[in-house]
Amino acid sequence: MNSYKVVELLGDGIATELSTSIHRVAKSLPCELEFIQVDLSDEERIRRGAEVYDEAEKLMREHRVSIKYPTATTKDSPNRILRSRCQFAVIHRPVATIPGITTNFKRHLDIDIVRIATGGTYEDAGRRIGPDTAVSMRVISRGPSKHASRFAFKLAMVRGTGVVAASKYTIQQATDGLFDEVAHGVARDYPTIDFRSELFDALLANLIINPEKYGVIVVPNEYGDFLSDAACGLIGSIGLGDSASYAFDDEGEVILAMFDPSGGTAPDIAGQNLCNPTAALLALASLLRHVGELDASQALRSSIFAAIDEKRTTPDIGGTLSTTEFTEEVCNRFEKLTATA
Ligand code: ATP
View 1 (spheres, helix red, strand yellow):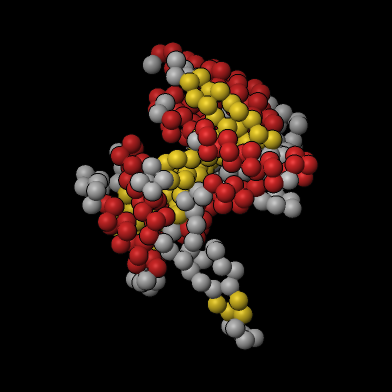
View 2: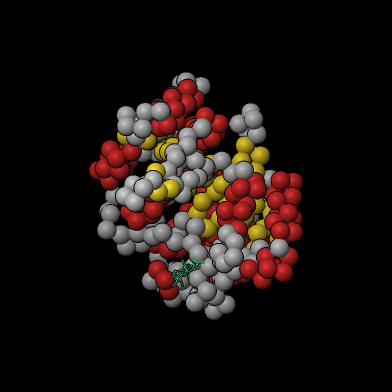
């Protein structure tokens, strides 16, 4: 049985329940996950200060794969601090239609958004120049553009889809032009993968009209931010998805990966065995794919989606099950699927 060490970054609110759910599913896996915990709850961050981040960073660098639960942003933002300490350059956000979830958008969507995690307009809050005008700087760099593009192509190879690079390269000719040039350069290394550039505004319309034409989409930082939420709106939920952050070495190999549910800490329902662990379990499925356990990853996703489709889920999405019962439901389905595989 393959064995993997996973750094587990505990957080606030529903984080403990999500962790319990993950550990339960881990018991059903055909591989072993050894969790190394770091408590990033608000209480521990106040008590230990920078030391808690030193420990988290050291373990994350040593073991290279982590799972993180929601943390409250109070005095500091753990997400921002970890991003900067670990130099995460790419954020991956899978967004797929979840059967059984009511949506306004009725078409099937299954896309992977690969977003440059740094730069764009997000590094500079800007400044006023005179009473009626403000400016800010927009940054696009070759390194992160290359990491994101390579990551997108590798993902497309695994998924068997094409890659679309989306930006406003006709308007933002220097910045998005550089991003687009880098994406085209990387595309030359993957001649078998279907690749095209699209203007970001056109992509938003085309995605709604022809969602099946999209597999992996690579974008600069702010477009990735907009697209992630827009796509989640199409599948009817911002809170049910997962995301992953990656750091790379100079050769473009992933040296650090962190997987997390995209939702918040939900303090109003914490400790009541009510929270929906779907996003955390999808994060675990992405982690399994990353370490090479492709069948287990796929089986876990299918088990989660099948349970939701049959309304065997938590109250927030129309079911009647507790967190523990939903987790058992997923595990039972997963065990059946992997036993017959
Ligand atoms: P934070 O400040 O961490 O974002 P929040 O409560 O302001 O916390 P969310 O955590 O996103 O924001 O919660 C928004 C609403 O969605 C709350 O009513 C919460 O109970 C609900 N919610 C969030 N996550 C879940 C979940 N996993 N399962 C069920 N309900 C959830």
